[in-house]
Length: 287
Ligand SMILES: O=C(CO)[C@H](O)[C@H](O)COP(=O)(O)O
Picture (cartoon, rainbow, N blue to C red):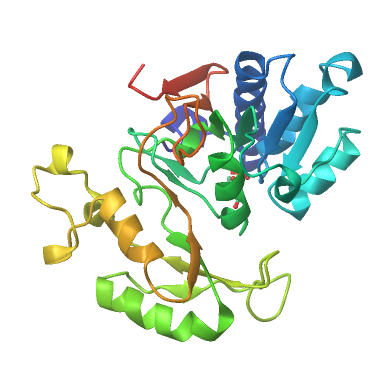
């Protein structure tokens, strides 16, 4: 959802302030609705919206938060947790059969089925591990992230974390699949050369046109498995994760998070701060 005409009449600073306040509204509402005082294990994602999630949690006070441990998805969220005086824990120290009670994270684009593109901050692998370790994964975002189809507003492409030695082969495979100009993400202007993730890998951004990500039901297209260049989100995700050298992909897809068992990549709910100060809630199951 782009800026409206009246919003585009705002100055750049005013537009930025509007986006910030919408992120904050979404984050505070999500924490109010989904963080229960009895919870012990809470996942904290990456990005600028999650900053407000941590702010909202810290405002609950130590009486509530001191009984909780907070699991980051990268160095940025690790620092956020520490700066807020919350207890830091690592997902690798959670027993494999245990779950986070809830995980909050942002997104780069969210479609009507709650499929997500994530990885704009290059933390997609840890984000997927934390999200799928949670009984409930909750997404927080501003109004610009709402999209009828993935690839409509997020034009940079699907972030894909790859082993450095495989990057050229993965790029060639992506081009053969119809990705439009996939590239290894550059660190410029802040860093010469490619971005290196917290896992020592590279990020490839692979654009696919929104048409390539059509849903079967919406487009009336049979199959959507890449034949004739048409992919559904699920089929494309399956194909991408199977490319040798790919560690993880920034498509969060598949079954939604309606269940309270962990394992879902799609959120149980997505909160979007709106331009008018309100918050839109999209829930799994279409509520
Ligand atoms: O996936 C992510 C990082 O890898 C972020 O959640 C995503 O980029 C959204 O960030 P922001 O809240 O700053 O818009």
